[in-house]
Amino acid sequence: MASFYKGLIRPILFQMDPEKAHHFSMQMLKCSAKLRLPLGMIRALYGSGIPKKPVELCGLRFPNPVGIAAGLDKDGEAIEALFAMGFGFIEVGTVTPEPQPGNPKPRLFRYPETEAVVNRMGFNNAGAAALKQRIVQFKKRYKGNGILGVNIGKQKTTKIAEATGDYLSGYRNFAEHADYIAANISSPNTPNLRELQGSEHLVDLLSTLKAEEAQRHSLGLATPPLFLKIAPDLAPEAVQQIVELLLEHEWDGIIATNTTIDREGDNAHYESPGGLSGKPLKERSTEIIRQISEITAGKLPIIGVGGIQTTEDACEKLDAGASLVQVYSGFIYEGPGMAKAIVSGL
Image (cartoon, rainbow, N blue to C red; front, top):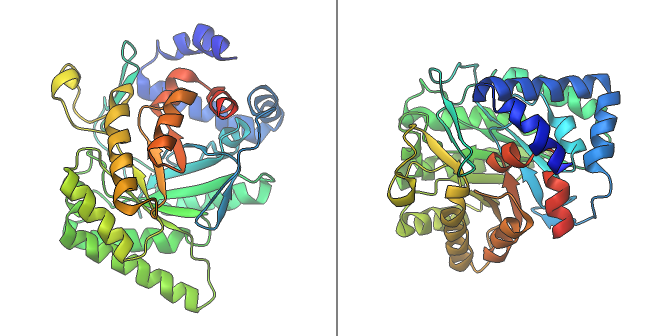
């Protein structure tokens, strides 16, 4: 199946503008879920025969450790089809409180020679209300055991000093509907967003969401685990500071890492501005995962993401200290048989 995708489907998609190809693919997957028969074919071709590799993490049981990272299905249009391919968990978003168009086009670029992607999308999404409605409808239909995460972010127009309010809104919108919630403070494509990784803003964000969680717990309401998604461009001392704050505020885990803006050395020829992902990110994200694991002695659950295409890549992240892994750019290059290939290899 991998050869069919790489030999026939991918060349057709790669003739298209990257963002148009992405939109087309999402719409096809969305239609397959609605029509049911194509969804069954996807499940039969790609989701059958995947060995059970369950992972218990943060009170959740993941059917296997391979998931889809945020950014691929921002608006939750293809959740069911992606689960049918055998992924153990799907993270939708990044979603903002209100709809926003994102940055001007073109804003998505492929580099097939190095199997890399650069994006400067800018949290383009249909908003929290639309995503929540899709998730509610999805859960009415879905009979599987895949885990659904929601990645939340701030509105482009919201000032950094007021950003916590957007994340609080996101938590409140999806606490009843998500299996876990990830706060994205590390995208390079929303102006000044990465300033939230500094201690002053971060303490406010971490403490506010945990206070909301405590309030919900006291009322007997759902309190999904909280993860923080960080950048790969942080200095070691910044990583240490963030990890210590996560432990202090009793957050449930960390996602390492987002895309990189580094254009030094081997990355110098990626001229398109924005976040670089895919193979060029693999080493750096693994370094961050290993550092986090060493700092916490494995006490802080890690979802590893960055440059994963093969079982070997996934094992590298797991050996470094990750409990789960996510793919995005690798999925563009490897296709719908990716989950089965990686999980079977594990």
